[in-house]
Length: 372
Image 1 (tube, rainbow, N blue to C red):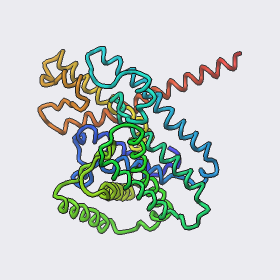
Image 2: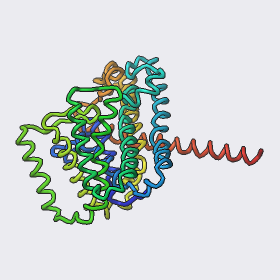
Image 3: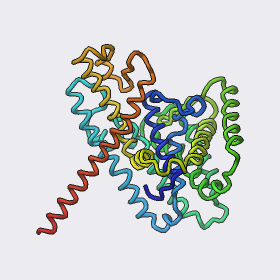
Image 4: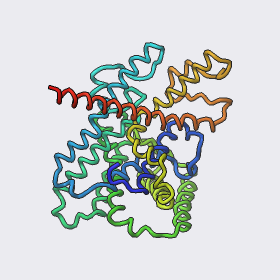
């Protein structure tokens, strides 16, 4: 990972774990979820980290920067979308009813306007907003840096206003089309700038005593919970939320603040951790293939159901028709940790195989070229 440092490597890793756990009913663990719900901040955390590593020199080479982002985000998104489309096409031959039709619209347009077309790669809807954020940010800063009043704080305020506007528009419950892509991009925009702001202005001042720091965070959360009489609910994919329009930002910033401080405390302990570095370095693959990890576990459970005396309560029909069906032996929720581990390790394994294939293909091409 470029520009790696121990604290933000940990944040990449914990962000990946939070996303996977959020997709398997917390994965049998509880990482302060009763106070900081992952769905409120896990993608905002990734956006924050991306903004932290933004460099001003990108503004001197805007076209090459955008092309780099296309190669890193958009092209892989379309390639992976194509293979997931084939995966859906094949699984439907075995009675699965998950995923849309394998056609040009779902291959080319839906990744932008929906992102959930083939179901198994639904986590990838976030790629388009992130790409738009990075392009918008570099273009805006390149052509407005001559205005001296536009410092990092002012940019954050501007981005926050645009984000709140997106939340206001989203109250109309828009679920597809170019507009939802625009609203997603605008909503996450302030978190990107918050990362840049933290890097340049806030980090060096972030020296509050840990006990006081966490006390303030938890007290703010308690006040919010008591005020609205429940834990807030928010769906970032469709920008659906309950309560005031500023609440999604308050909750996301609190969640980010919590994990940034945890990362600061643990960075010296985790900096040499092979597992933390492995997860962080494969965050993109985990985002892409985590539901395949769940699929593999469910498939093994079905095999056990069909050919052994175990897994008697496994539901083959639900497996084929409900993405969010998870077989939980004897109703013990802690067994979901198996899905969490699979949702992390199987994507890493897939990425390792892809890397080996790329290396062999490149080596084959190079050898053929030299022998001509």
